[in-house]
Amino acid sequence: MAGRGARGAPLPQPAGEGAGDVILLRAVDDEGLERLLALAVADADPADVMPPGWSADRLDEFRGFYRGFRRDAYEVVADGRTVGMARLTAGGEAGLWLARAARGAGLGLEVLRALVEEAPRRDVFTVVAHTTTDNVAAVRILTRAGAVLEVADGHVTARIAVPLEPPPEYAGPPDVARESGDGVSGG
Image (cartoon, rainbow, N blue to C red):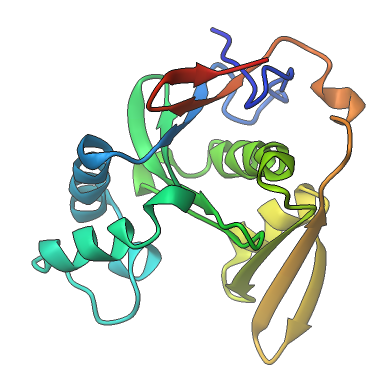
């Protein structure tokens, strides 16, 4: 199955990295927020989805937190299922979390690549992500995406220069789409 790049640009699925999954970044609306909340409670570590101290019994706190940056947030959908959340702020800060069941299939790298592709439409030319050195999966994803890493005191700051044109490996059929409230964006 093929999807659409955020601008309709082709984003091929590298072999062995979630091959067959169609990734969609969908703007978070009220229904999407509820799907993310249900997913966070059922299949995510609270530390991955909220600031320290949150627990699954504080549902309104989750809703309020995510409504606070809704314009920067995307519901990550793989093959029709909500599997996580990604964000890209106007300042270029990126973040994402995936449900436990969605990890290990290469979706994190695909989502990060889709955020980098989305960046120019937001006048962002460097995508920045923060993690810790013990988050080996995140560091690996950032490295594979071409990030320059700065490591200090157990903290990692990753910077990804946004290419002006899609890299040559994106020259196949599209696999990633971005959906707004008006439908799938493409070009």
